[in-house]
Length: 250
Image (tube, one colour):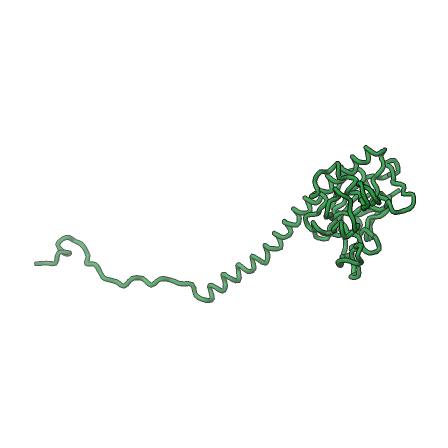
């Protein structure tokens, strides 16, 4: 009798061993890891730049709001700017600042802080005894020609009428105070610092890091932390080449 497979036309089945599973070789794994490392090295700086750009945008927004708050103060006080510092204001023996003067127009201490360096200046260390309702930390400094110190004899804050070129006159900006009482520019945003102008607009200005490594922060207890020193770039106009935004363009 013929085999069944020949009667029904089916070929015989052949028994075969299961196919071996393919695995990555060590070289292939190393190549994949190397590609991932290269992509990470390329993308991480891009992500960092995007994150810093977002912080800069937030900083510009803070300065815009704060400049408007200061200009509201100006309108309420015979078109004169607040002093940069006052002695024995706020109902007690304390030091008040322009932050204290503008506080009623702000109601939010966070806008006094740059997201890239929110604790740049501790007001208690800067003044010794800050008046109540003064923001505890800030990141912005002032043009000393616009905000006159109340510790000077017979301080005379400027009025709006004095500014012949308000769109070119810096009012507030990213900075810190050194031991010489200079309001040093601090380029916190990829070698850019944000500035607010007397006409109310804000913009980012490039700055170049200098070789000075001796700058220290002013505190009432003596020299504080080390500060970087920058020079304002050419687009800074009247302030180009300076390490602080001081003076009023005429």
